[in-house]
Image (cartoon, rainbow over all chains, first blue to last red; front, top):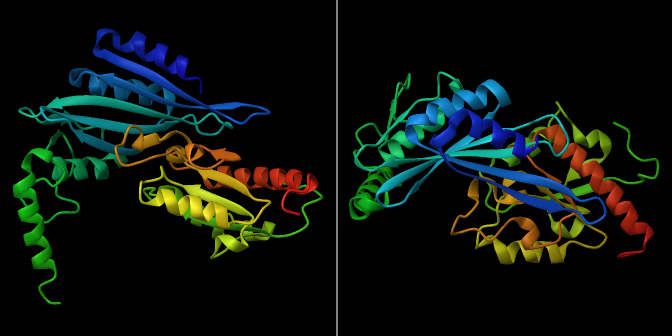
Length: 175
Length: 146
């Protein structure tokens, strides 16, 4: 998969909603050099679902994982995909990044396109306190249902550490 | 899949996880279990780098793993081949720009074979190991570590 093909396809499909794109190339070997690529695109939240729909319709992605970055005023969500399986050196990592403001923590679900995304979406809900709109099953996956704080948020540090201490105490009560 | 005619011994592989999410490690285990069964080619995991011909490395190299990875590389006898499995080790992947990683792996130790993928498929891992066999034979011919 040549990243330039992917990027031009997304530029055409998204227009102004595509805020940034880059393809990081790493060349390997000295006798017969081969390149592998990491492709990152940043899109507006309003165009996020459209971006994933475009990806699913054209490139047969495999969702590796969803990760997040607490950047202070905003929460950046990175959706890491693996695209182009089946040809030697054809597989590239494709990441869709979108920023969500802290005062309006909402993101549409992509489980209508990729049902397997639900596990990672549930994890983001409980650890970042973001609302994934339209998720079929939004229960907590790892944390207790009555846990009110979100451990990966940096702005809740004192509250988080207190709560984690309480949880550890509760879990080790029989030891 | 045909191995080269000159392939004359079993290949002992040491698996190093340098902070991966375990996705690639599970795929390596899948390559060892009966479905793919790499032991039929004489490829097997060993418990110590001192017995290994090949290092199979996953993950983006976290800071605590840096001295350990270098030490494992130095403990492996020559001739040896290094295979990187997964996008994290090849390019940084999911952990690109993270504050707590020093990878990708080729910035720490020399790498012979790259297997991209997130996670890399077992077929791709087996293909990578077979490539490493070729590399080892070239090294042996040139007398490295002989």
